[in-house]
Length: 331
Image (cartoon, rainbow, N blue to C red; front, side):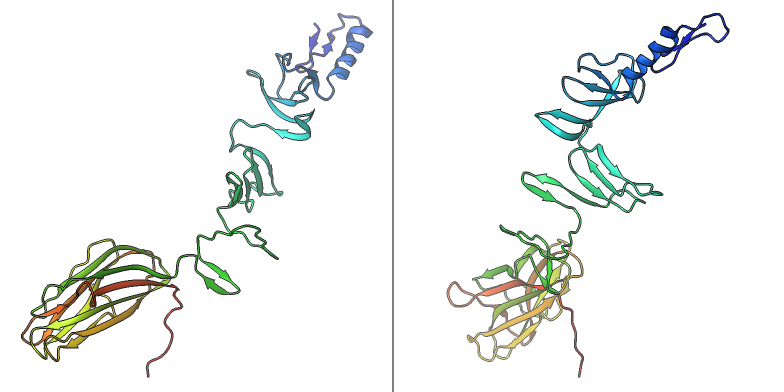
């Protein structure tokens, strides 16, 4: 009994000798089918083959598209073609269902992952070939090309417009901060504080929730004017602080180097003190500061005097840039 081949339906005569050999049926028609189907099958976008085989190529004469059958159920046609029409002149067109689908990728023999991969949306990824891509380049917004990784320029980087830097940079071996260097927080009090009548601390002013960056150096200072009711009383001022967003109290940690003292030589005469210290956080922190005073010796009351004209109590924090570290020796 005669049969046909699975893909091209070529005629196969019976092998039991029951049929005579027919040149037209057994040979010429098969040659014609092979000649017609060699390469891609020509059709239109509306007359695609209804029963294709996986891997069959077709070329649509009305669109110029070249498609391959990737699933006989449906069937599903995937487009990979050289398009010969005005809208896509002689270009390679790869159409995928989703923007993140792979449009092109390349391996080196022995690799288990792509070393180079281009997604349908144009995002490009590079990798080692042993893991998924770790370096990328893509369109992040209109007129904007972005990488989530590092970019190294071997010769020259030329910027015709404005360069915007959001992190710290190193130029000619020197660190350049992208954050403003200078005063990042200040607070001023223009009224006298509550009185301290013992060594128990009394709060004067507070500033809270300042975001500071690990690896940077901050200069923290204050100014106040000690006033007392009894001559020769001794006052002390210091900063207490927290770094976790909690409100500082007189029981919080003392900021190293923030202490100052003064002796009230004559009542009614203020003793002005300015104190500054440096603070270098190892990691990002939320800094809050409390300026407090106490009476260390004597019998009267100590206050931080301030008014609305000549005398103020003030605290400030300055960002000094990247911390160079502490270097030197004791003598």
